Length: 244
Image 1: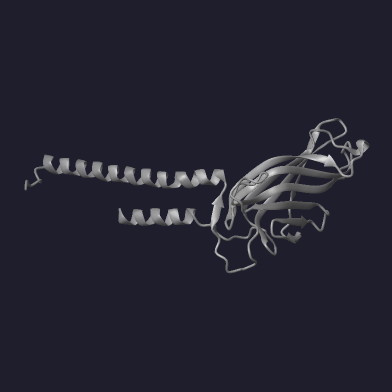
Image 2: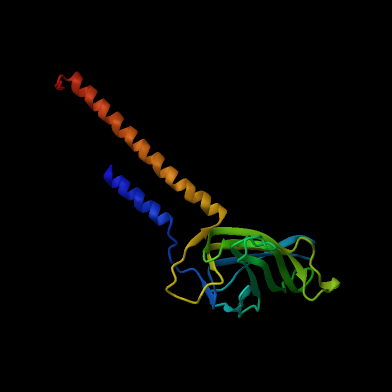
C-alpha cells in the first residue's frame, strides 16, 4: 500500500512538470516559444474543389522581432519557402480589461501567416496572408503559457489585394500547436524558473489526474479488504481461527 502511495505521488509530480524534449525552440530577446507549429493550408483547385497542403514551421526558422514595453512581436521565417509566421503580443498591467487582453495579463492579439500558393492545379496562384485578430494565449503577467495541443482556423486574404488573384472563401490555414511553451515580456535570463499557466484543455486534465489516482487507491483498499474478509472466512471454516 505504501509503495502505491509513493508511485501515485511521483505520477502527480510528473503530471505537473513540463519536461524538456527535442521540440523546436525559437527565441528573440524577451520572447521564447518552444513547440511544434503545424499549418494545414487549404486552397481551391481548377474544378472548384478544395485541396490541402501541410506545412510545419522548421526548427531552423529565423526568429526576429522587437521587444518594447507594451508591445512586442515574434516573426518566424522559413528560409526554404519564404513563408513567415508572425505573432503580435500586448501586455495589460492595469486593473481593467484593455482591448482583448484581461487585466494583469499578456497575450497574442494578432496572428498572421504570409505564404504563397504555386501549386499546378491551384485555381488562383500568388501570395496569401492568413490573418487572425483577437485574444490568444491570454496569460497572467510573469507566467508562461503551456498547452499540449491547440488549433484554430484562420481565413486567407490576397497580398496585395488583386481581385483576379483572390482566393475563394474556402481558403485558409488551420493553425495547430503541439506542446507549446510560450513566454513574453520577460527578461532574457536562462536561469529563470517558469511558473506555468495551462490552457483550458490541460487544466481539465490536471483536475482529472488526482481524482483518477484517488479512485484507484480507493479501489485497491476495497480489494485488499475483500481479500482479507474472504481469507478470514476460510480460516474460520477450517477451524483455524482463534477468538481473542
